[in-house]
Amino acid sequence: MIGRVFDFLSKDMAMDLGTANTLIYVKGKGVVLDEPSMVTLNKETGKTVAVGREARNLLGRHGRDLITSRPMKDGVIHDFETATFMIKSFLGKVFNRLPLSRPRLVVAVPAGITSVEKRAVMEAAEVAGAGKIFLMEEPMAAAIGSGLPVDQPQGQMIVDVGGGTTEVAILSKFSIACSECLRVAGDETDEAICTYLRKEHRMSVSSMMGEVIKIKLASAVPLKKKLELKLRGKDVVTHMPKVVTVTDGEIREAIGDSTRAIVEAVRRVLEKASPELATDVAQNGIWLAGGGSLLRGLRLLVHQSTGLDIRRSEDPLRSVIRGAGTVAENLDHYRDVFIN
Image (cartoon, rainbow, N blue to C red; front, side, top):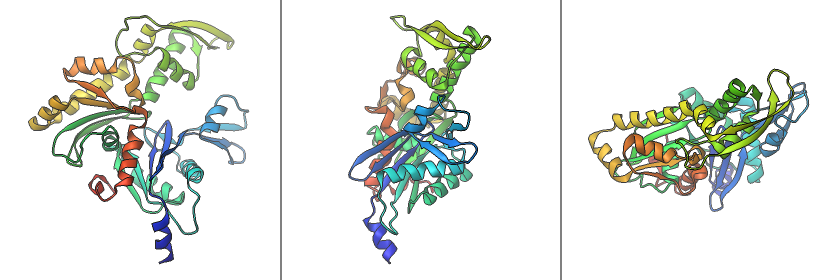
């Protein structure tokens, strides 16, 4: 009875446990945490040195006794123990827990998640201090966060390009009618840029620098105004510092396979749709969400491939957590979206 009283007093919350970033939403307050999904450990002692933003700032700049890693891979838990500590640390930053109280927690997970991966997410959240846990699929959360009427019997299409996965789905009446979870997203493009530089310029750069290059130069289609960037890295042969100039055309070539894979996934999901759903999507257009949707020219590339109107979420970086937060605010109304 006492436990139920404290559970009632605790705040309902939502979490977007992403490969690149973890975001937490608290009922009545909105998004209260947005930090990199990173942890720095001491290899000798196993002790955690830094979590989140502090761990990211240490990446590539610490001594040999430390290692910075991401406990999430392709949108799911890759290292259970480290992920549990990370979740507990993040929850501790935003929730001053009363004795015996445990917040109800909505967690957004990839649509292609396995039963084992579901269990890992739920166990990690439980160990971290959450009470009742509700899992919902990321494309559903992204659609709700983009303001789409998922409670209506009408097809709505969302393409959520995140850090570890790209989720493509057509939704109707609180459910996903057809979808595809692609393990190609922001991290894949960052790595493709790093690989290209090693191969074509014999330069080694970090994945963080790959992300910076992507933001400054990358595009899905040729640009009207050419871009270039002077890069500083490490020569893979001499191991000495090196400076090269890279163009937007080179980076577009580097990420070409990734962008084509996303477009092909969109076409495959459209092919799976019933005539009625396809008609709805033709009328409503396709919505893009997630940080990857900010790639220059991606809307045009998808439009050229499908012939449909392409729109982008008002806040693409936070569309998933905003959707999960909306669900946390209205658990009864959205009870049909849960998958556990």
